[in-house]
Length: 489
Ligand code: BG6
Image (cartoon, protein in one colour):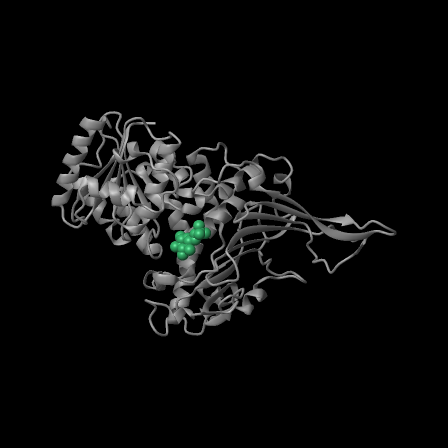
């Protein structure tokens, strides 16, 4: 890996403290950072290097365990007003100084841990002082956090603006779900085994379900969340990325271009939900106050920062189809929500039942009884359900489970998503990052739903009591006799 300076814009903010600096420290501890490395924090707060080292490292409560003082010496800080071009000359000379002292060779990774309104401004200012241009053998990369736009139009505009200053290969768009081990493991489950892939198509699969539930409400993020909603916050990015991993065609190689190329094809095959069909294929909900296990939980509209009468959805469920050879006619159901009964993300693959039923079932089995449940979090693992004979006379069938827990594979903790993603960006591996064209395709799919929810007053926003599985009408999205959502426990 190349020697480099990791530059964090917004270094005095919450994300840097909670996620970025702890992840980089973990890489230091595991000796995964390049030998010549420096971290330059840039923000408006007037810190000296020393004050930054104390705040971001020595007194950072998000860094667990013993703290190696050698890491503090790699941290530097430059206070600037990121909205004024003058500051960027200071950043440039500071970087040149670090290159001299730390031998970082002019390789820089700029992480924009800032409000999205700065995503167009900072790259332009960097370009103005030439910090986007590489000399012979150098790299200059840019990492940005979601949201990548607000709708299709703004996403296209954001891409255009970023690509004006940095080539697409140098732009790393973080979707932290792609950094989760179990999301990556979806590819391994499918493509490293001979037993699943032959069945992974319309001939054997009845339908697929993805649930990402959270028990927390919006907490203190009401202001941000109200301008977003569940569809933008979770579906456009995290859930559609999971769908891409489950449904894409096998890539030729496990490299960035092959995997991201297949994902793009998949997003292009999503059958658009027309505005006139939104009420039929999508359900939106908002949590209401309720008493859950003795605790009074506020309704969404009572949360701090949420405007009275807000119509923002805290729950979204969709049914859709993928129009390609593999998935023709197979419904996909996805849902996500805040203030649901538990925190869990899982994928359920429901296989078709055998064509002819020979045996009586012991229990009230659904007509699709073979399920593969892929638990993304928590208790990461795989659960396979199938029918077995109940001992005794006759042929009575009972549903049983084969359960694999990731924790049985290794004693080591599953690494944090940011750790993996930051390391990949430092190495120049974009496999687990979203490419601009895919982001636009994902927006193209959700855009008509967003517009219909905003403009069509006849589409209901259903209330659901906090601590429940969302609006009951979402059950009606799922077709088929005795088939319903699987609620993770
Ligand atoms: C973020 C959303 O991207 O993902 C949050 O903005 C959500 O609203 C979070 O809570 C969920 O991530 P995880 O990793 O906790 O499932």
